[in-house]
Image (cartoon, rainbow, N blue to C red; front, side):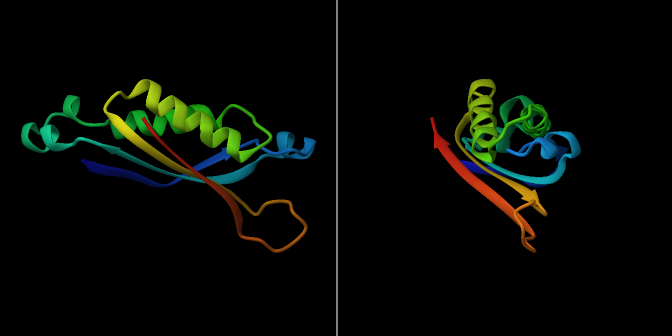
Length: 118
């Protein structure tokens, strides 16, 4: 078993419960960790034998582009999409963080972390 981690994927998106959040948008950071059997790839040195980082990044960008009120909903969509599209993946962990959230205080970010095993 091995782990692949995409750290601090920067995305501008339009999530939130406030109408203004859907119009103005915010900066987000997404961290994605997947676990899979990487032993074959370590021997063959072939992309087809591992989890494609580009595909992971594309899944995150695709799901982040679909507006949602809650970060929990976006995180679940990312997890479900990874498990659906990448059969090699056994476990997915994702953190979606909204930077400078409009919550009436000086808060750097709020984040939601979710994890699912196949």
